Image 1 (cartoon, rainbow, N blue to C red):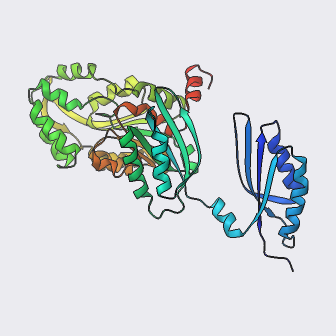
Image 2 (cartoon, one colour):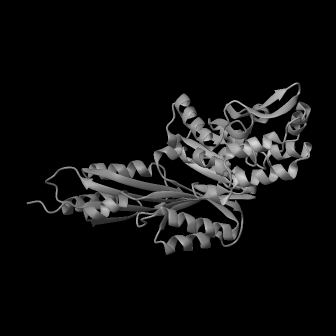
Length: 402
């Protein structure tokens, strides 16, 4: 009577050599065994591979399989370890709650110690980590197993506070196939891709800067409904000449890193969209400047060369932004998980929720609570490292070899 089936765990370690993976797989196959799961890495000339292996035939004793594999493994010029484990242990090894932490910021001593200590306090194991960028901007990616956590939200909060203390940002996302399949990135415009709020600049020209700025702050922090705030602010702009809009458009300043980020994302094949609660006049200029695929914003009503103080047509508020994301997904044939959203204000919350990955940029606390991570003002460029870019890949794209 065959004994209870067990799994074999094969670990191979040594100097990296050509065709090693083929040789190891041949050893397993020649032992009449099947590979259930595998992890492998080669770095700085060292090679390590971890395999979970099972018997093929029901009457094949695990102990016999162990002896066959041990004998055949002698062909490998590597350090080899083979263990027999219970099915429950093998299931735990392959059924993990993997999360990817991307840590972004300016290099500083102690960041890795702070993060690893925080993870250890939650019994979260770091399984793999590597640098995506080294230089003025540092990006470090960690693959962690959060299987023992009931609520990932608590860990996210602790990690974010830890990063805040050392001046870093973090973005957390599950390690799913969709992480490599994202195809569309949607951005807010004001205080995200461009510095400041366009309406505040218009208000200064209309000499109502203080009044409009106060309303803007209340709207972005969620103290007043966005539609009401927009109508109040636009009403204060009544009589402003269109020529002022042109002057403000010419004075728009891109947030640091915007141009490089957009260039990289376009080179990687992403579709890009602006979804703004601001104004179409300025969104169209930015769309043309950065070669975006889409731009959605509110229309200022103009009559006889001046603003009437009214918004023309439907107002794009938080709900409207969320709906546009869904419409773009349908148009592009994408699932929610294939979309990334970046914004800074309370009216971006639904846009982030309707996307697979939501990033709060230099944001108010209200938005941080619904986001998967945050980037501060100097780290916008770091978004590219959460979407598959590395320093090496970016250099190749810039040289036209990728």
